[in-house]
Image (cartoon, rainbow, N blue to C red; front, side, top):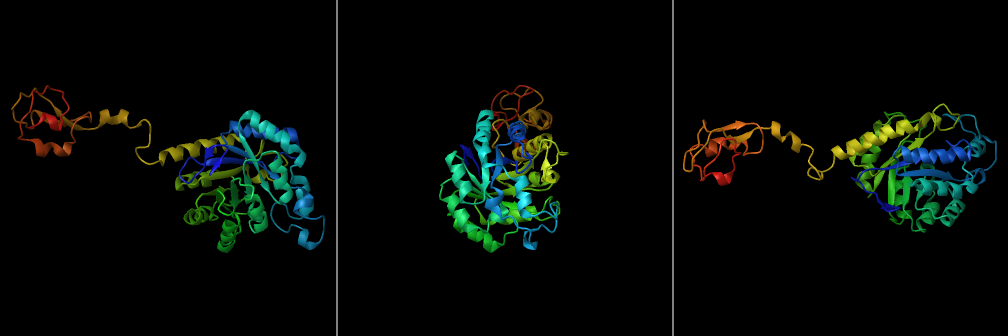
Length: 341
């Protein structure tokens, strides 16, 4: 999968997404500041949510439409989404800001109208939220654009994930392990869900609602391709998502930790420069500790295991004792096979 030229795959450096959601608090200036903060915090992409209250629900106060638990308890769905939505009219300006600061921007889609609006302004990818994974017609509609898809799997059964895979038509799609709890507790089996996805899908990652970087670090060590976390300018702000969002400073610490863990888990030998090379001077190996004439026998007096580690390994000492020097060997010469008959 590629988004704006960035290769995304399991085992590569994770693609870091800042989810803005409603953390702009209805202020477009704050939304643009969040885009700039995401770039400075080390994110690869910033993501908004494209819906209106009327496209996601209806204005109704019946018991089915009232939230009964969690941080938004007592609110109606319509009132919640009225507070939380990002107006469609903002998106051209937000894309302009993202382009200006040099960060990819895309959005979660919730119906055909959001896909159509984003297509008109050149959105490079689409996210399907956990709650929408069961909306296979929406997944098919987004897949028909030919753009990469990222689908969160919170609450989804194995059968529902399978249906989403089929609906996406294998159109460069990544699946994210997610616990749809706000905030999520670290004890919830997010990384176990990731392990399952890594065995059943081509590209996988996490959409994490915990308030720490532990899940991100663990997912990186497992080879996750994508890590998504909510971003807020100030955790004291009156935002519906404040309780499970990271500040720019916290996101930057997470990004640095993810980078360090990823570098430490790359295949051995993949480094351009071996960072251990400078420590070779502290390793032992076989050296001539006296001048040895051509034809002279090697013994424990003229060859020893000493530091540095540029010569033959010490385990070779019993095998070369008693053999003769093929050439004159100066004291302080690292022993090698060509010096021995």
